[in-house]
Amino acid sequence: MLSALFEYANEGIIVSDKNGKIVIANPTVEKQFGYEVEMLIGRSIEELVPESVSNDQVKFEQEKLASPRPRAMGKGIDLFGQRKNNSVFPVEMSVSLFETSEGKYLMYFIVDITERKKQELEIKSAQEEIIQLNVYLEKRVIERTKELDDANTELARTKAEVIQSFNKERELNELKSRFVTTASHEFRTPLATILSSVSLIGKYNEPNDEEKRMKHINRIKLSVTHLTEILNNFLSLGKLEEGIVSNNPEPIILDDFIKSLIDDNRTLLKKGQLVKYKHIKGVTAIYLDKYLFHSILLNLISNAIKYSPENKTIQITTKAQNQKLTLCVIDQGMGIPATDQKNLFDRFFRAKNVENIQGTGLGLNIVKKYAELMHGEIIFDSTEGVGTTFQLEFPLS
Image 1 (cartoon, rainbow, N blue to C red):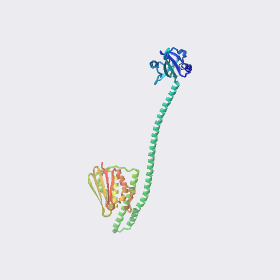
Image 2 (image 1 turned 90 degrees about the vertical axis):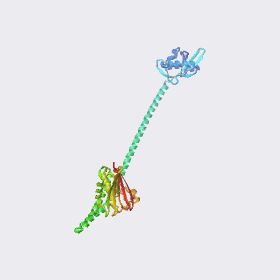
Image 3 (image 1 turned 135 degrees about the horizontal axis):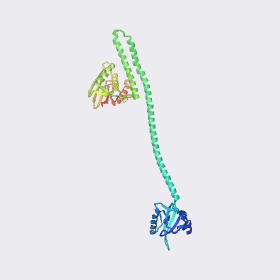
Image 4 (image 1 turned 135 degrees about the vertical axis):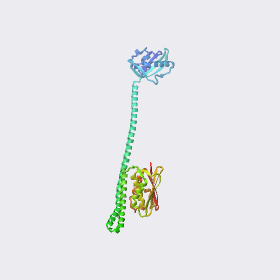
């Protein structure tokens, strides 16, 4: 049985004496190393090991003789055998020491692991490919995630633009509708007044009819002024909606500018009404956009005249200090109901106590937007039946 195990074992088995000379080898060794067994007898075991590892082999054998216990050779390192044709192949080798009456011997068990190493290399290569593929896939995932994020961001931006355009279009349609409604209503009264006054003027031909003629001429002037105000408000609103109104500061002398504006509005004054102006403190030469400033003042003064009764005074004050201009327009008019004050600057809004007075509800909305264009702000204080104060502040720098 021992002979059969030795002859037919799949492992190569070599027995050497204590000097490393081969005493016996089984047929598997012939297949592994290409030597006939008879050719190996008496040869050194080192002839079957490449020079690069033979010294380690000898050292191992010496350690084996000094410490007689079975052990695997080359643990943690690769071992190789060298064939007769000098080709090298990977092996696993274990060695055991045994002793007979003739002396000590080493028995080597050798396994050719060429196929295993080949498979290990293939597995390692496959693992490296998998690692590289994972790295590539992770990179692609990151790139695709970024692309999707960018696409989502762009989609959100496009959606916002579409919604904004849609809302803008809807606002413009509402604006057009309100314009037609307001214009048809607001234009009717002054046009009727102009028509009737012109008809009546034609009948007053006598010299003593001068007073009557002037009365109707003034009515015509007031109606034309009102029509002009309506048109100016709609034109201003249209320009604001289109974003074509800009702030272009230039030198303004406050005294001359405001007094000239007051003179231009004297035809609007009711019986006994006065408009007074006072500069309280600071410089009077400032830099503001003349058109925007003129529109703001014109709107506030005409409103103060319109919503104040006869024999009342409208006070305008200016003050320049702390790098800002403060402008106040104070009237003694009907005031604004407390419940309506929160909506005062809304487009087309009119307080409930002025519904029977002509107006478009656009003036204060335009005033606020013009003030913001000039980097200013507007606040007001009002008590119904007492009067209203509008205060505007603009930077002087």
